[in-house]
Length: 224
Length: 169
Ligand code: HEM
Ligand code: FES
Image (cartoon, rainbow over all chains, first blue to last red; front, top):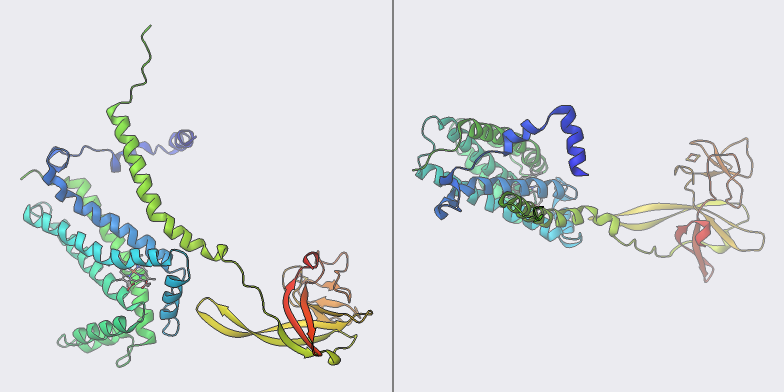
C-alpha cells in the first residue's frame, strides 16, 4: 500500500533523487561509533536537533492551553499542568528540554572546537552555529518569563536591568524589550511571547537550514 | 531447484530495526502530546446543578422569558453567565421550561417574535418557527422540538437544571 502510494507520487514528480540527496549517503568510518566508539562525539549535533524537534512540538502543543496575558498566564499554566491529561509530561518535556538543548548544543560546540572542525572552509558554518547558540539562549530567556510566576518575573526584571546597563543604547533596549520604560507587565509578557513563539523560531529554522545545507555541501570534516 | 531461503540481508535487518526503534521513539514522544491535545474531547461533562429561578405563582399560561445566572467554570476562567428559558404552565397545570436555543443552527428564539405568526416561537436567523409546546413547525428550518429544561418545584420555588432534548426526557 505505502509502496504503491510512493510509486504513484514518484512516477509523477520523481521524488527519489530528492530524498536520496538528503538522506542516502555514506557515513564515513571515522564518524561511525560502531567502528570507533569515541566517534559518539559526532552525535551531539544530531541530538541537539532531536531535542529542538521536541521543543518545537511540545511548545506548539502548550500553546493550545497557554495564554500570554498577565491575568491568565499563570492560571492557564497551572490548569494545563494539573487538570489536563499528560499536561505535566508535555510541560515537563518543554521545561527540561530547554536546558537539555543548551547542554547538547554546548557539547556539539566543544567537539567542533577541539577537533578544529571549524577551520577553512567551514568558518562560515561556525558563525552560523554561534548565531544558533544566541537564538537558543534567546528562546530560553523569553520562554522563562511565560509562566508568569515569581521566578519568571524576577528573572526577567534582572535581565532587563542587565540590558539597561549597556552604555548609550541600554535604556532604549530595555524599553523595547519590556514594552514600557517602567513597568514589567502586560506588554512585556505579550512581547516575550511573540518573540519566543514566532520570531526566534523563524530565525532558528532559517539558521538551521543554512547549517545543514552547508554540512551537505562541504561534507563532515576528516579524521584527526 | 534451489531451496528458497528467506534470508534477511544485513541492510534489511538494519532498516527494520532502525525503523522500529525510530518509530517507537517517535510514538513515545508524540503520545503524551496527542493525549494532551485531545483532552477536551475526553472530559466528562459536569452535570448541571439546579438553580432557583422564579416563584411558581408568578408563572402563567403565557410563556415568559426568565433569566438567571450560573457560575461557569471555563478551564482557568470562572464567570457568571446568564441563562434563559421560556416558561409557562401547560393545560394540566405542569410547568414547561423551554430552551431558547434554536434547533436549526443555534440562534435565539422569542415567543411571538414575529408579528405574522402569533402564538409561536420565532427565530430571526432563518425564520424558524415552533408551536407553543416547543414542537417545530413543519417546513421551517428547525428539524426538532426545542430542548426542555429539567425542572423541580420546592416550597413554591421553581428550580431549573440542564436543558435536554425531548427524546431524553
Ligand atoms: C516553536 C517553538 C516553541 C514554542 C511554540 C514554544 C512555546 C512555549 C510556551 C507556550 C511556553 C509557556 C508554557 C510553560 O511555561 O510551560 C514556553 C515556555 C518555555 N519555553 Fe518555549 N517554545 C518553543 C521553543 C522553545 C525552545 C527551542 C526553547 C529552548 C531554549 C524554549 C524554552 C522555553 C522555556 C525555558 C520556557 C519556560 C518553561 C517553564 O518554566 O516551564 N522554547 N514555550
Ligand atoms: S438558527 Fe434558527 S432558524 Fe436557523
